[in-house]
Image (tube, rainbow over all chains, first blue to last red; front, side, top):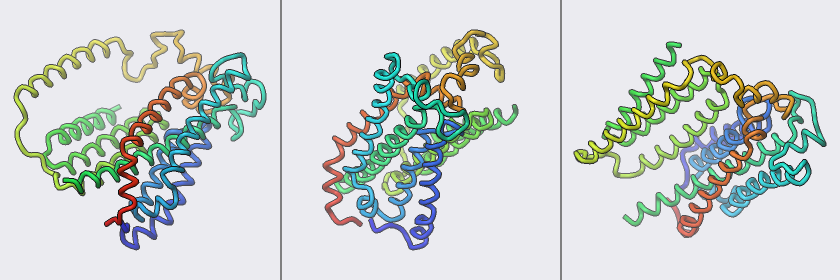
Length: 151
Length: 183
Protein backbone atom coordinates (compact mmCIF):
# COMPACT_ATOMS: atom_id res chain seq x y z
CA UNK A 1 0.00 0.00 0.00
CA UNK A 2 1.47 3.32 -1.05
CA UNK A 3 -0.79 5.35 1.23
CA UNK A 4 -3.28 8.11 0.66
CA UNK A 5 -3.06 11.48 -1.15
CA UNK A 6 -0.56 14.23 -0.36
CA UNK A 7 -3.17 16.26 1.57
CA UNK A 8 -3.75 13.43 4.03
CA UNK A 9 -0.01 12.79 4.32
CA UNK A 10 0.82 16.44 5.10
CA UNK A 11 -1.97 16.88 7.63
CA UNK A 12 -1.24 13.62 9.42
CA UNK A 13 2.49 14.37 9.59
CA UNK A 14 1.60 17.56 11.51
CA UNK A 15 -1.12 16.04 13.66
CA UNK A 16 0.81 12.93 14.72
CA UNK A 17 3.15 15.03 16.88
CA UNK A 18 0.23 16.49 18.81
CA UNK A 19 -1.35 13.06 19.29
CA UNK A 20 1.90 11.54 20.61
CA UNK A 21 2.40 14.51 22.96
CA UNK A 22 -1.17 14.19 24.24
CA UNK A 23 -0.68 10.47 24.87
CA UNK A 24 2.54 11.09 26.79
CA UNK A 25 0.80 13.81 28.83
CA UNK A 26 -2.09 11.51 29.68
CA UNK A 27 0.35 8.80 30.81
CA UNK A 28 2.68 11.04 32.85
CA UNK A 29 -0.08 13.00 34.60
CA UNK A 30 -2.22 9.93 35.25
CA UNK A 31 -1.93 10.28 39.02
CA UNK A 32 -3.02 13.95 39.00
CA UNK A 33 -5.62 14.37 36.25
CA UNK A 34 -8.13 11.98 34.63
CA UNK A 35 -6.52 9.41 32.41
CA UNK A 36 -3.79 6.93 33.09
CA UNK A 37 -1.77 4.19 31.51
CA UNK A 38 -4.51 2.46 29.56
CA UNK A 39 -6.03 5.55 27.90
CA UNK A 40 -2.60 7.05 27.12
CA UNK A 41 -1.39 3.78 25.65
CA UNK A 42 -4.42 3.56 23.37
CA UNK A 43 -3.80 7.17 22.22
CA UNK A 44 -0.16 6.30 21.37
CA UNK A 45 -1.33 3.23 19.43
CA UNK A 46 -3.90 5.33 17.53
CA UNK A 47 -1.18 7.82 16.49
CA UNK A 48 0.72 4.96 14.87
CA UNK A 49 -2.55 3.76 13.34
CA UNK A 50 -2.98 7.21 11.76
CA UNK A 51 0.53 7.01 10.28
CA UNK A 52 -0.16 3.49 9.03
CA UNK A 53 -3.39 4.54 7.31
CA UNK A 54 -1.83 7.64 5.75
CA UNK A 55 1.61 6.44 4.69
CA UNK A 56 1.16 2.71 4.25
CA UNK A 57 2.39 -0.35 6.06
CA UNK A 58 6.02 -0.32 4.92
CA UNK A 59 6.64 3.18 6.28
CA UNK A 60 5.51 2.15 9.75
CA UNK A 61 7.45 -1.08 9.46
CA UNK A 62 10.67 0.95 8.95
CA UNK A 63 9.83 3.22 11.88
CA UNK A 64 8.64 0.59 14.36
CA UNK A 65 9.53 -2.98 13.31
CA UNK A 66 7.48 -5.91 14.56
CA UNK A 67 10.41 -7.25 16.62
CA UNK A 68 10.94 -3.91 18.41
CA UNK A 69 7.20 -3.62 19.00
CA UNK A 70 6.94 -7.01 20.69
CA UNK A 71 10.07 -6.19 22.73
CA UNK A 72 8.43 -2.97 23.98
CA UNK A 73 5.35 -5.01 24.85
CA UNK A 74 7.39 -7.47 26.92
CA UNK A 75 9.35 -4.58 28.51
CA UNK A 76 6.15 -2.96 29.75
CA UNK A 77 4.85 -6.19 31.28
CA UNK A 78 8.25 -6.88 32.87
CA UNK A 79 8.44 -3.36 34.37
CA UNK A 80 5.01 -3.72 35.93
CA UNK A 81 5.87 -7.12 37.41
CA UNK A 82 9.24 -5.75 38.62
CA UNK A 83 7.46 -2.94 40.51
CA UNK A 84 5.24 -5.54 42.18
CA UNK A 85 8.18 -7.75 43.16
CA UNK A 86 10.21 -4.76 44.43
CA UNK A 87 7.32 -3.98 46.77
CA UNK A 88 7.54 -7.58 47.96
CA UNK A 89 11.29 -7.30 48.59
CA UNK A 90 11.72 -3.78 49.94
CA UNK A 91 8.60 -3.12 51.99
CA UNK A 92 7.20 -5.49 54.61
CA UNK A 93 6.77 -8.43 52.22
CA UNK A 94 3.59 -7.04 50.64
CA UNK A 95 3.03 -7.68 46.94
CA UNK A 96 2.43 -4.33 45.18
CA UNK A 97 3.37 -2.29 48.26
CA UNK A 98 3.91 1.37 47.38
CA UNK A 99 7.51 1.24 48.63
CA UNK A 100 8.64 4.54 47.10
CA UNK A 101 5.89 6.55 48.77
CA UNK A 102 6.10 4.84 52.13
CA UNK A 103 9.86 4.71 52.61
CA UNK A 104 12.06 6.46 50.09
CA UNK A 105 10.41 9.35 48.20
CA UNK A 106 7.21 10.62 49.82
CA UNK A 107 6.94 13.70 47.64
CA UNK A 108 4.28 16.37 48.01
CA UNK A 109 0.68 15.80 46.96
CA UNK A 110 -0.35 17.39 43.62
CA UNK A 111 3.30 17.49 42.45
CA UNK A 112 4.43 15.70 39.31
CA UNK A 113 6.91 13.59 41.30
CA UNK A 114 4.65 12.20 43.98
CA UNK A 115 2.61 9.11 44.78
CA UNK A 116 5.59 6.75 44.70
CA UNK A 117 5.22 3.86 42.29
CA UNK A 118 1.93 4.98 40.69
CA UNK A 119 3.54 7.09 37.89
CA UNK A 120 6.02 4.28 37.20
CA UNK A 121 3.17 1.77 36.92
CA UNK A 122 1.34 4.18 34.62
CA UNK A 123 4.39 4.39 32.34
CA UNK A 124 4.75 0.58 32.30
CA UNK A 125 1.07 0.00 31.51
CA UNK A 126 1.07 2.73 28.85
CA UNK A 127 4.08 1.16 27.13
CA UNK A 128 2.51 -2.28 27.28
CA UNK A 129 -0.98 -1.30 26.10
CA UNK A 130 0.29 0.94 23.29
CA UNK A 131 2.71 -1.64 21.91
CA UNK A 132 0.32 -4.56 22.16
CA UNK A 133 -2.69 -2.76 20.64
CA UNK A 134 -0.58 -1.56 17.73
CA UNK A 135 0.71 -5.13 17.29
CA UNK A 136 -2.88 -6.41 17.19
CA UNK A 137 -3.92 -3.80 14.61
CA UNK A 138 -0.90 -4.53 12.43
CA UNK A 139 -1.34 -8.30 12.53
CA UNK A 140 -5.10 -8.06 11.89
CA UNK A 141 -4.60 -5.79 8.88
CA UNK A 142 -2.10 -8.20 7.31
CA UNK A 143 -4.30 -11.19 8.10
CA UNK A 144 -7.33 -9.59 6.46
CA UNK A 145 -5.49 -9.10 3.18
CA UNK A 146 -4.22 -12.66 3.22
CA UNK A 147 -7.73 -14.16 3.41
CA UNK A 148 -8.99 -11.93 0.60
CA UNK A 149 -6.13 -13.12 -1.61
CA UNK A 150 -6.91 -16.78 -1.00
CA UNK A 151 -10.61 -16.45 -1.74
CA UNK B 1 -31.42 14.03 34.95
CA UNK B 2 -33.40 14.11 31.69
CA UNK B 3 -30.18 14.03 29.68
CA UNK B 4 -29.62 10.45 30.84
CA UNK B 5 -33.01 9.34 29.56
CA UNK B 6 -32.41 11.07 26.23
CA UNK B 7 -28.99 9.40 25.91
CA UNK B 8 -30.40 6.02 26.96
CA UNK B 9 -33.14 6.17 24.30
CA UNK B 10 -30.52 7.25 21.73
CA UNK B 11 -28.26 4.31 22.68
CA UNK B 12 -31.12 1.79 22.55
CA UNK B 13 -32.29 3.05 19.13
CA UNK B 14 -28.72 2.87 17.80
CA UNK B 15 -28.32 -0.69 19.11
CA UNK B 16 -31.61 -1.82 17.51
CA UNK B 17 -30.64 -0.28 14.16
CA UNK B 18 -27.18 -1.89 14.38
CA UNK B 19 -28.79 -5.32 14.79
CA UNK B 20 -31.57 -4.95 12.25
CA UNK B 21 -29.87 -3.19 9.33
CA UNK B 22 -28.73 -5.21 6.34
CA UNK B 23 -25.79 -2.96 5.46
CA UNK B 24 -22.61 -3.78 7.38
CA UNK B 25 -21.15 -0.26 7.16
CA UNK B 26 -24.25 1.39 8.65
CA UNK B 27 -24.24 -1.23 11.42
CA UNK B 28 -20.64 -0.26 12.24
CA UNK B 29 -21.55 3.44 12.25
CA UNK B 30 -24.48 2.73 14.59
CA UNK B 31 -22.12 0.93 16.97
CA UNK B 32 -19.91 4.02 16.91
CA UNK B 33 -22.88 6.24 17.79
CA UNK B 34 -23.70 3.86 20.64
CA UNK B 35 -20.18 4.11 22.05
CA UNK B 36 -20.06 7.90 21.82
CA UNK B 37 -23.45 8.11 23.56
CA UNK B 38 -22.07 5.90 26.32
CA UNK B 39 -18.97 8.09 26.70
CA UNK B 40 -21.16 11.23 26.91
CA UNK B 41 -23.15 9.47 29.62
CA UNK B 42 -19.98 8.70 31.59
CA UNK B 43 -18.99 12.36 31.24
CA UNK B 44 -22.32 13.58 32.64
CA UNK B 45 -22.01 11.06 35.48
CA UNK B 46 -18.69 12.77 36.39
CA UNK B 47 -16.42 9.87 35.51
CA UNK B 48 -13.90 11.51 33.15
CA UNK B 49 -11.40 8.63 33.40
CA UNK B 50 -13.90 6.16 32.00
CA UNK B 51 -15.11 8.71 29.43
CA UNK B 52 -11.59 9.23 28.06
CA UNK B 53 -10.93 5.49 27.84
CA UNK B 54 -14.33 4.80 26.25
CA UNK B 55 -13.95 7.49 23.59
CA UNK B 56 -10.38 6.49 22.68
CA UNK B 57 -11.13 2.76 22.47
CA UNK B 58 -14.27 3.59 20.46
CA UNK B 59 -12.31 5.59 17.90
CA UNK B 60 -9.70 2.84 17.54
CA UNK B 61 -12.28 0.06 17.23
CA UNK B 62 -14.37 2.08 14.78
CA UNK B 63 -11.37 2.68 12.50
CA UNK B 64 -10.52 -1.04 12.47
CA UNK B 65 -14.13 -2.09 11.86
CA UNK B 66 -14.70 0.46 9.07
CA UNK B 67 -11.43 -0.52 7.41
CA UNK B 68 -12.31 -4.19 7.52
CA UNK B 69 -15.90 -3.69 6.30
CA UNK B 70 -15.22 -1.23 3.48
CA UNK B 71 -12.75 -3.33 1.52
CA UNK B 72 -14.71 -6.58 1.77
CA UNK B 73 -17.08 -7.36 -1.08
CA UNK B 74 -19.54 -8.83 1.45
CA UNK B 75 -21.18 -5.64 2.73
CA UNK B 76 -24.79 -6.79 2.60
CA UNK B 77 -26.46 -9.50 4.65
CA UNK B 78 -29.17 -11.45 2.90
CA UNK B 79 -31.46 -14.27 3.94
CA UNK B 80 -33.93 -14.70 6.79
CA UNK B 81 -33.20 -15.61 10.37
CA UNK B 82 -33.74 -19.13 11.64
CA UNK B 83 -36.94 -19.63 13.63
CA UNK B 84 -35.41 -21.98 16.23
CA UNK B 85 -32.40 -19.78 16.92
CA UNK B 86 -34.60 -16.70 17.31
CA UNK B 87 -36.83 -18.43 19.86
CA UNK B 88 -33.84 -19.70 21.85
CA UNK B 89 -32.19 -16.27 21.93
CA UNK B 90 -35.44 -14.56 23.00
CA UNK B 91 -35.83 -17.06 25.86
CA UNK B 92 -32.21 -16.52 27.01
CA UNK B 93 -32.62 -12.73 26.84
CA UNK B 94 -35.84 -12.98 28.90
CA UNK B 95 -34.09 -15.05 31.60
CA UNK B 96 -31.23 -12.55 31.75
CA UNK B 97 -33.80 -9.74 31.96
CA UNK B 98 -35.51 -11.38 34.95
CA UNK B 99 -32.15 -11.83 36.70
CA UNK B 100 -31.31 -8.19 35.97
CA UNK B 101 -34.59 -7.01 37.51
CA UNK B 102 -33.76 -9.01 40.65
CA UNK B 103 -30.27 -7.49 40.82
CA UNK B 104 -31.35 -3.90 40.21
CA UNK B 105 -33.92 -4.10 43.00
CA UNK B 106 -31.09 -4.36 45.54
CA UNK B 107 -29.18 -1.34 44.19
CA UNK B 108 -29.62 2.15 45.69
CA UNK B 109 -31.69 4.73 43.81
CA UNK B 110 -30.12 6.63 40.95
CA UNK B 111 -28.02 9.51 42.23
CA UNK B 112 -27.63 8.32 45.82
CA UNK B 113 -24.24 7.03 46.93
CA UNK B 114 -23.88 3.37 47.85
CA UNK B 115 -22.53 4.18 51.32
CA UNK B 116 -25.96 5.55 52.22
CA UNK B 117 -26.84 1.85 52.54
CA UNK B 118 -23.51 0.26 53.45
CA UNK B 119 -21.89 2.81 55.74
CA UNK B 120 -18.65 0.91 56.39
CA UNK B 121 -17.89 -0.20 52.84
CA UNK B 122 -14.44 -0.24 51.33
CA UNK B 123 -15.24 2.80 49.16
CA UNK B 124 -15.43 5.03 52.22
CA UNK B 125 -11.88 4.10 53.18
CA UNK B 126 -10.63 4.83 49.66
CA UNK B 127 -12.29 8.26 49.61
CA UNK B 128 -11.21 9.32 53.10
CA UNK B 129 -7.67 7.94 53.30
CA UNK B 130 -6.66 7.60 49.66
CA UNK B 131 -4.57 10.77 49.58
CA UNK B 132 -2.73 9.97 52.82
CA UNK B 133 -2.12 6.33 51.97
CA UNK B 134 -0.93 6.67 48.38
CA UNK B 135 -0.24 10.37 47.75
CA UNK B 136 -2.03 10.33 44.38
CA UNK B 137 -4.41 13.22 43.71
CA UNK B 138 -6.47 11.19 41.23
CA UNK B 139 -8.40 8.74 43.35
CA UNK B 140 -9.15 6.42 40.44
CA UNK B 141 -5.46 5.82 39.76
CA UNK B 142 -4.81 5.37 43.48
CA UNK B 143 -7.40 2.59 43.50
CA UNK B 144 -6.42 0.79 40.30
CA UNK B 145 -2.65 1.06 40.79
CA UNK B 146 -2.28 0.83 44.56
CA UNK B 147 -5.22 -0.69 46.44
CA UNK B 148 -6.33 -2.98 43.62
CA UNK B 149 -3.08 -3.25 41.65
CA UNK B 150 -3.47 -7.03 41.65
CA UNK B 151 -6.53 -6.63 39.39
CA UNK B 152 -4.51 -4.48 37.01
CA UNK B 153 -1.81 -7.16 36.92
CA UNK B 154 -4.47 -9.69 35.93
CA UNK B 155 -5.77 -7.41 33.19
CA UNK B 156 -2.23 -6.90 31.89
CA UNK B 157 -1.67 -10.66 31.89
CA UNK B 158 -4.87 -11.23 29.89
CA UNK B 159 -3.76 -8.68 27.28
CA UNK B 160 -0.26 -10.20 27.17
CA UNK B 161 -1.63 -13.72 26.61
CA UNK B 162 -3.90 -12.48 23.80
CA UNK B 163 -0.95 -10.83 22.08
CA UNK B 164 1.18 -13.98 22.38
CA UNK B 165 -1.57 -16.08 20.80
CA UNK B 166 -2.25 -13.62 17.98
CA UNK B 167 1.46 -13.20 17.25
CA UNK B 168 2.14 -16.93 17.16
CA UNK B 169 -0.78 -17.59 14.81
CA UNK B 170 -0.45 -14.61 12.48
CA UNK B 171 3.25 -13.77 12.44
CA UNK B 172 4.41 -16.05 9.65
CA UNK B 173 1.71 -14.78 7.30
CA UNK B 174 2.56 -11.18 8.20
CA UNK B 175 6.26 -11.71 7.48
CA UNK B 176 5.54 -13.42 4.15
CA UNK B 177 3.16 -10.64 3.18
CA UNK B 178 5.64 -7.92 4.01
CA UNK B 179 8.20 -9.36 1.60
CA UNK B 180 5.75 -9.36 -1.29
CA UNK B 181 5.15 -6.07 -3.11
CA UNK B 182 1.93 -4.48 -1.95
CA UNK B 183 -0.86 -2.71 -3.81
